[in-house]
Amino acid sequence: MTKRLEQLRKAIGVKDREILELLNSRAALSREIGRVKSEAGIPVYDHGQEKNVFRNLAGENRGPLEAPMVEAIFREIVSACRALQAPLRVACLGPEGSFSHGAVLARFGSGADMVPGESIFHVFDAVERKRADLAVVPVENSLEGAVHFTLDRLVSTPLRITGEILLPVHHCLLAPVPSREGLKRVYSHPQALAQCRNWLRKNLPACRWIETASTAEGAQKAQEDREGAALASREAAAIYGLHVLEERIEDHPSNVTRFLILGWRDTKPTGKDKTSVLFGTKHEPGSLHQALEPFASEALNLLKIQSHPWKDRVWEYFFFVDFAGHEEDEKVGRCLKSLERAVTFLRILGSYPAEERTS
Image 1: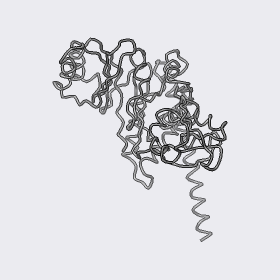
Image 2: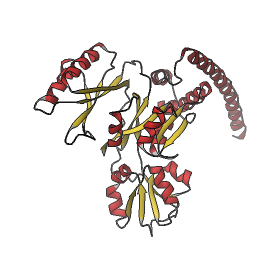
Image 3: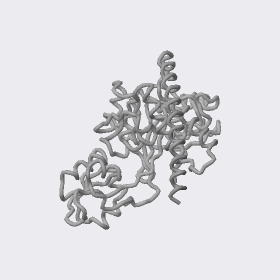
Image 4: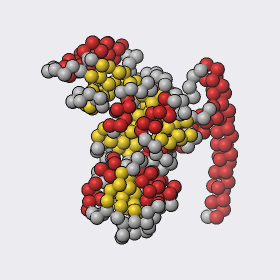
């Protein structure tokens, strides 16, 4: 048995050297692609192209590695090779260990440079002022609904939506002490507190809830408070030296947050796309019906419609709408022209590859 084990380990060593040689060969090709992109003024990150890479790999995979594991491995390979072309700076909410940071890692890999923002405003601002290449911002949660700070900024930002990320969210109770006894405060982002409200009321009824700008900031606060705990990710526990007292304490297991990726350039059609728009209507009967009629006429599938109050107009609302299709599609173009005639305000936020819904 020992001899057989040694033979298998030697065989793996040979494969590892072959993989290393292939990885460096791929990296050299990627670096050359970076030179070509630079000369042509093409951005380093191309979400549509990366989706095609992962889609092709899934089609070629014969196992025993399962598709999610293959994608996770190749996402880091792609991330490392992309970093050889040029640094990719991605702004997101909160310091390292936040769920927004987790979304950045899930999409761009560890080769991306994170630019942390204290608030959603600062995340938008980092890209608008060219301190980052892309922004990743939460826009809705499957349980708690829209993130209103993001909708507020989408009205005025010149940035375009270039992609989306669907991230399953699992909250842990973290603390600097190994027991729940004596805890008096729980720190976290308002959305996280809302997503765990039933568990907190049942298990920590005497604790005061203290809102923070991000879950990672909540972990930082708990780190300094021997009577405090935080709702944050398991990764945050390792980063901030906290004990994981409880895991997966969200009130519903199907807890998914949708993040938008924003940048300066449009995304080309991939065949499975989504378009997002904002529009306002007249304050009179039938105005919303008239605005939605072009979608029905062109048989476009509405995926989301969210009303949201104007910040500077009392009792007036705009609508955030997602629908299937790309603005370069002929019928989408016709729909948008008809929509513009039917509304008082229209902003096309962007078309981008649609992600698979996570259960």
